[in-house]
Amino acid sequence: MNYSVISADNHIIEPRDLFVSRMPRAFRDRAPRVAPGADGGDGWSWKGEVPSRTFGIEAVAGQGAGYKASGLRWEEILPGNYDGAAHLADMDKDGVDAAVVFPQVTINAYAEPDRPFALAVLGTYNDWLLDDFQKVDPKRLVGLCMLPVNDGMDTAVAEMDRCLAKGARGFFIPGIPKRSYFDPYYEPLWKAASAAGVPLCLHRTFGGTTTDAIFRHDQPGVNVAGIVIRFFSAVDHFTYLIYSGVFERNPGLKVVDAEVNCGWVEFWKAMLDLNWEQQKHWARFPFSHRPSDALGRNLFVSVLNDEVGFAAMQRDPQIASMSMYSIDYPHSVTLWPNSKKYIAELTQGLDPKLKRDVLAGNAARVFGLA
Image (cartoon, rainbow, N blue to C red; front, side, top):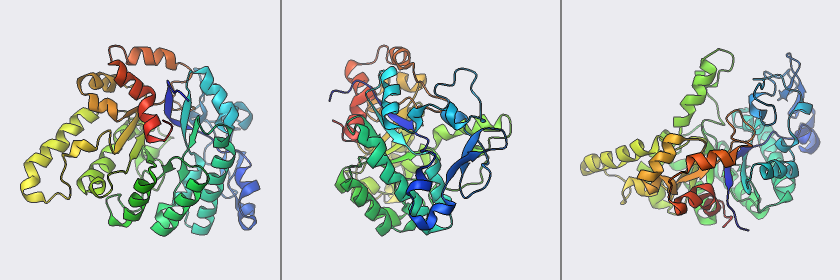
């Protein structure tokens, strides 16, 4: 299949009856389910409680300019949120040939203290994603199966192998892990993903536990400040992965951080190499290559309407080599269904090859669609 436009960051809202109907029977009485919230909308109840918030900014697609921050009922959200065929139909409306799909409520499993319950949630989601959602057209839908990285590397790698056998092309790992990703604990995962040729994908600070204000939705100003701050969340993970020698030991490993754009990359790249040059006489770096060599080879980002980043691509083609266009369907910053307009504006003057790479080529290469 020829791909002209691939969105490297789409989302779903899991089907309302997914966990109630498909989790192992021992867990179904407390399975996550959609329930009415106090504001009249519907939201996810994790274990029978009234939802803390209802659908809104995570399901903006199709809601129009005056969308609600919350308060949507299940019947008001587009079926493309949870149905693979409907998702593709919405992509067709936007001229998008394929999409990489990230999870939604299932990320709560990373913070769930009852680990057998959490693992059942993850496994149920992964099976539905591959057997139902992606199966509609595996050449156009790439569902990211979730890896239980906090439950031991044997468990995480076993789930990777299980999902690979079912057709997985990429995997999700949490943005806020219990252990930093430079910890040697993860080495079996890096090795397995590198050997399999599949990417490991973060999504900003999505997944894990934190008390930071960036997740506050109730205080005016703070709610949007968190959105802005999270565009810079890749710097920490990416820098530590490079400097701790992860890619020296696992040269085939690919790590993606979604919805972080690339306008910050030009300065960060300069600091990576400058500090390597300045400090390498004493720092005993565990790698032999220039740090920025990892960009476009091992490290990738998804980009939205990042005018600063697209301008930087014209100055530095390496930034284009690590960047993948995305529409963030159906979230509040989504470019759907106006990709044609955004692409024309953002890529004006960009070298045709770089344009093809950013719009589809890089994603096809990273997610095995080429």
